[in-house]
Amino acid sequence: MPDSRNWFAPTPDALRRAFAASRRDGSWLVWRQRRLLNFASNDYLGLAVCKGVRRAAAEAILTHGLGSGASRLVSGDDLAFHHLERALAEWKGYEDCLLVGSGMLANIGLLSCLADRHCRIYADRLNHASLLDGARLSGARLRRYAHRDLHMLAKQLAHDPPGRRIIVSDGVFSMDGDCADIRGLIRLAEQYDALLLIDDAHGIGTLPDPRGLTAMQRQAGHPRLIEVGTFGKAFGGYGAFILGTHALIEGLRQRLRTMIYSTALPPALADAMIEALRRVRKGVRTRHLQRNIARFRALAHDLPLAPSSTAIQPLMVGDNERALRIASKLRASGFYVPAIRPPTVPSGTARLRITLSALHTPAQIEALAARLKIILQA
Image 1 (tube, rainbow, N blue to C red):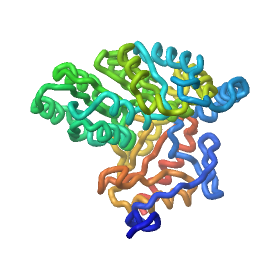
Image 2 (image 1 turned 30 degrees about the horizontal axis):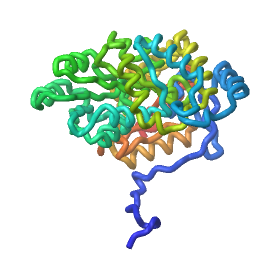
Image 3 (image 1 turned 90 degrees about the vertical axis):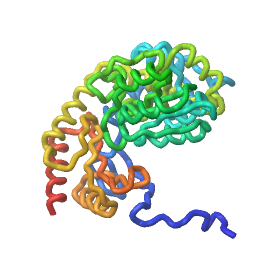
Image 4 (image 1 turned 60 degrees about the vertical axis):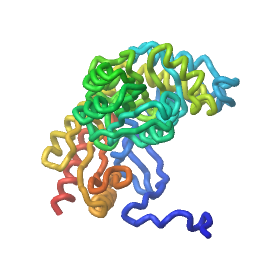
């Protein structure tokens, strides 16, 4: 009989992933005692190392202590949470907001709360794993449509009998860097009487409108729309938030198990994220990031990049082993760019996932583009 030593089948070397402890310093990463330029971070605006945000966090820890000590509905609530929720709702254009421990907890909890076996969920095939896991755990009937294929989604909605329905999509897709058609999804939600859940973790703070994709497409605050954002990307922190109508958010306060049965976020983190939000709202770092994206796209126009205009710039390789070799050669040249392979992405679509930051200098971006060309031509 198997025990914990042989419960799992061995992972093939080409698919094996490992933790790699590192220290980060702005656009640099110290990995296995080597200093590398970091093109693998979701700290898109550099706020994780911003002196003002760090100072706000340090001062708040001295005021509040470290942890919250309980869930929010027991004794772990804090005024800082309420201030941050109000500020986010006002900035994003929604009636209300609820903080959650992480984006994973937000998406799993939301779908498990909103849906049951009497509900149908329609999900983009390239959605983040948390949305897929949440749909499966809810017990709802799950239908997946081809990536960004609204014609296929419309056919699925038209084919199925009326009932409770939720359309689910990433905003900016985390492994491809392309964007959902929020307007088109809203039209289908209205036509077929569905809710729409958008996870814009990688869009908020990084797009030309720092409020994210729903604001850019002028759909923020729509009564059929529920939006999830995170502090772990552009805000440089940790945690997540859910935006929607007053009625929806109040219902989640009473029912969202991943919030109710979890220790609340550290109050000091909320204070730090209020300071991060102040800086995101200014848009200075976002504009710098946009210039870096344009610079990289221009320099790497002849490379096999996916058609992305966001901070996520996938270089498509296809073969797992080749992706690993390219990543290894980049590390040897002083660049940290991860090879992304199945099961994170579909089979045959291995890639180098390049992420750009406002911290990158023009010289650093030019150096990466030049090295990629040399490696790919070898």
